[in-house]
Structure formats: structure tokens, C-alpha cells
Image 1 (cartoon, one colour):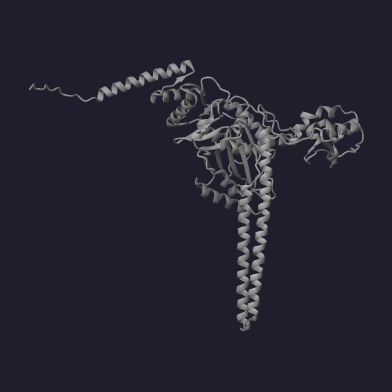
Image 2 (cartoon, helix red, strand yellow):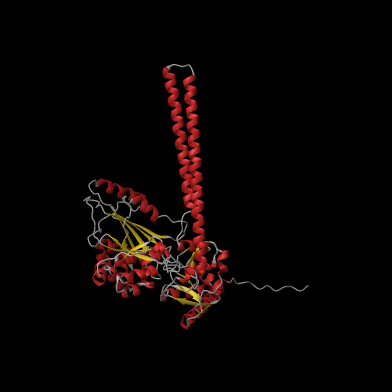
Length: 542
């Protein structure tokens, strides 16, 4: 599992109310929120607890730092713990960080491939009214993550805390956007050649070949690409730090070339999708073209909106001036004219406020309609609109085996099963690794192309709907994988509903057949007991 405190990267302090509003927003999804839990408040009601927490924060007037801590616990794909286990883990993390008696609201999100828990903590103690900021929190979090992984049998993840921050940031960006960073590109393309350089001239030549330039910045070096993107040299490799380079090559000698004047056939860095099994060149070209068009349309709309606003303001000014001239020309007393001037000025101010308000609304609408989309966001948007190629690219990003409860075809397929089934259903959302969420009756189905994912604590009615969807997609011969309790429950549901299905696992299939015979026998016995006794009457012959 992964646990981290989300830092506030803006100058303003975090807004606890806005954070809770985001965490509890279903966003049009039926199963985004699995649980909302309030701790250490007088009321378990969310709104009452929110008011109480805000009042507690306002009672501390001395603290200058952020009064809210946002902690996120995330679990690997396929690992689904019960709500009781999640609550116990949440309690242990809060105790370890020193927030045991602090007010908090925890929200379990289950709308992505990774189950995760958001914990909105009030750093102000409800009784002492002092602020608490944990010391060396990342070490405590890493140690507790390792301990919980052992206790609950979770997938072990490297919780190394001394890795370079720039590398971790680049990795997070690549995971979130799906686009290769400059740091990874340099490591892949020219790091070995840079290490083999024997002089500053050789190093500059290698960098020039790859459209790069090394510059002094602060107490170190940065590598700047042709498009202006820069990365700290020591974050690429420690051998490229200023101390190591000057010790190996001597005093720094700046290059005589510039990136802009390099030859057109140099290997230059351009943001591209991460390497995977599919060719994404055509899709990425279309994505770039659409983003460029969106930027142009947005810019032209903003110019038109500003021009329209300025024209309306000029007209309002002319009308206000005309009113003043009329008031000046009429014969009236000093006080009467003063009142008329005040009325005209108030009308002018109201008109200007309306014009500016309309402009802001139109501006925000245009900004939202033509907002820039990341590569993965664009793929999910296209996949939701029926683009099968975009959905296939998303699914090719999946790595590793899925270990959760699942229903799939007898033999694992390569995603060649047609997606025509999605045309008949309403798709709620698509994740960045291609898991499609849609409705089958009142049951939410999670489909990643090769299997139907089943969450823990799923009701028997929902399991019946999932089996029916699986039979439509994969046929009657199914493979059931997951916990023993889940597999036995699936067999029981299939037997109770007399489904014509065959399970791939021999023992599970025998158990299903046995249950089917028992249910058939019990039904025959119940029908025999309820059958009414009919008296036989002989009919007279005419």
C-alpha cells in the first residue's frame, strides 16, 4: 500500500469545507463513495461535523501554518479490504502521526482501479486548541505501511524514503499523464554517452546531438531541452552533479552552440507517450492537433468576449454621459440635480457590474469547454465516446496480474472480444488503464476487457447480474478466480438461479452441480407438499 500526505502547493491555506465537498462529490458515479466516517466529533452527521471542525479551527488564532492535513491511503489493484479493516488501518495511521484525538472525516473512494481512503484531518486539537504538525512523518508512514502489508498479506511495495525527489516527481508525472518526462528521456537516450565524455567539448557535442544544453543555475547544473523544458543534472545521475563534473572535466566551460541553432536532424526531446505494446503515433498526432485547435478556438473566443465587453462598457459610458448632459440642461434645484446625478451614477455602476459578471460567466464557460486535456484524459474521453483504439491503448498500460475476485472466459483472451456490448449500456466512467464501469440493471459492472471485476461484500442479486453479463460476453463456460468464499458464493448463486453455466475449475463445477441437484430435489419436495388433494368423481354415462 501507499500512504502520503498531500501537500498544499498554493500560497493560500487549504479550505477544509472545499476539501470535504470534493471528497464527498459522487461526480455522477454510482459507486464512487463506499463510506463516509466522522471521528472525534459530537455528531456523526457530516454537515454538523463540518461546522464543528471549522469552528474549532477558527478558535485557534495564533497558528499561521495550514490547519488541515490531507492523508491518502491507496492500495494496489485487486486488493479490496473490508470496511472494518479499512477503519482499523485508518485509526492506526492517525495514531502513528499523533492525530488520535483530532477531529477528522474519512471518505473511501472505490471509483478507480486502486481502492483508496481520503482522511481530512483537523490539525487543531478540539480541547487544547493547539496545532499539531507531525515530525518526520514520511518515516513513520513508511514503517507503518510495511507493518500493515505484513499483517494483512498485502503486496509489498518499496517504501524507500531517501530516493531523489526529482526522480519521484518525474515518475509521478509519468504515471499520471502517460507521457515520457525529460529526465527519463535523457536516461534512455544519452546518459551513457554523457558519462563517457572526457572533456567539456565532448560533453557539449553529445548534448548538441540530442538538442540539449547544460547551463549553470544556482550552485549546480541544469540540462535544457530545445523546447525550454529543464531538469536538474544531478537528478538524472549523480555523476552529472557540479562537483563530480568539475572534478572529472575541470572548471566549467560553456558551450558555444545554442539549442536553437542545432542541426535539424538532431535527436531532440519531444513529449511522447510512454513506450508500450501499441503504436500510438496516429492517436497522439490527432490528440496534439485537437489540443492546438482547442487553444486557437479558446484564444479567439476570449478576444471576442473582451471586445464585446469593452464595447458594452463604452456604450454604457456614452449613455451615462448623455444622462449627465440632460440633467445639466434641465432647470431644477441644486438638490434635485444632485439626486438625479446620484441615480444616474448608480445605474451606470449596476450596468458595469452586470457586464463584467456576464463576461466572467462566458469566460469560465469557454475555459471549461476548451480546457486543455492530458494525454490519458483525452484517451478516456475518446474511449467513453466509443473509440475502440483509445480503449485498447488504455488497456495496454495495465501491468501485472489482477489478483482480486473476477469472472472471465474459460481461456484468457487478448482483448479480442468485441466491445459491441458497450453500445447497449450506459458507460459511467473509464479509468486510465481501461476499466469500464457501466450499469446492468441496478448493479454496477467493472469490465477491464479480460474479466469482470467483483468487489468484496457484493450481494447475491448483484452476483446474479454479473454472471448474466459474463454469459452474454464470454459464453456459458466461465473461469472464476478469487477468494474461496467468493467462488463458493458464485456457485451458490448459479445453482439457485438455475443458470446454464459451466465453471472451468473442476471442483467448483462439481460443487455447483451438487447444489443444483439439491435445489431441484428441495423444490420437488416443496411442490409435492403444497399440491392439493383432488377428489375423483365418476361421471355418469348418458
